[in-house]
Image (cartoon, rainbow, N blue to C red; front, top):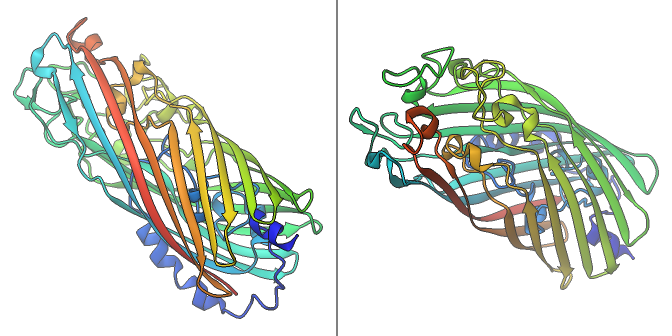
Length: 450
């Protein structure tokens, strides 16, 4: 039975044995992890990653009812008191391939295809957990919440006034959004079977956009924004905010574990340099999201985990407002990316092949938040992915040290819709546009129990 509970993710280690590493030795990694994780990429379930923590990533992100590492601040804070005292440090190479194409335009010089550069991103992760008592833990998880990144070359487009990029601006077209969360976490066992947890989410995000001069009340175009000069090419801007995540986890038996976690919308400060772009005068909050999960170990060697999650993108005006809103860019009800709320199903399997080896596999399917009517704005952020296939392993180096690897592949997805320029330049002038993306990811993490 002990092996079964270990696979589900619960440990029976004594807190005294696991408190030999000093606090200063563990937390010295935190500033480095935070600095590295400000890197950006376009993630997978919308702009959220498909999973947090290398073990969860190998199981398609299924983790709400699991307690395998110290990444509970990103998933379910109640898991930390079952995970025991440990340190986890890892990194992924995330490799998205994105392109956009316009065809059938009445103005032939608007037709063409561009592919985004910058196709490899480093995405570190960090977690530390300390058992204060057998029923109380204190830890911290540092993670990238996701982001958007595209870098399209100018291409061979012409909007009537000389060479232009795909959205009729000049030079490189693209965005760079990165979100970093530092999550101090406390978890408490109500009894031996049930625990609750709370994570304080300290958020930092930065953003820049290039190539949107046509939307900055440029000559020959309608006055799109109410704050000209605050739409594009202003370099990086940043903002901060505070939120919470609450969680519950319990094992109903040696075979079954359940869990649930919830994070309300996280209020972030405004991007003042881009108050003429984002709805709400530069507001860009992190959406409400939640998950429920179950883990089942039919025998000591096997664990199957199933999660259902929900990300409410539509509750953030700058993300969820339709791009067709009849208001200036940057206004309270200004146009956004038109992202809808999505549900995500994650199923993962772990097989403990021996005392040293555990192997994993998983499948993640989420909704596509982008509708065809909003395809033009989402050339900047083509978060169209639906399916993710994953695999992974853990190898025990010794009694207290392990290496974990994970691999993800997401096949190409696309969305096609009528160009925004049909309403600006006349019916048929802009034709149709298609955005596409596929992804792969490989990562490695080191964990130590103490």
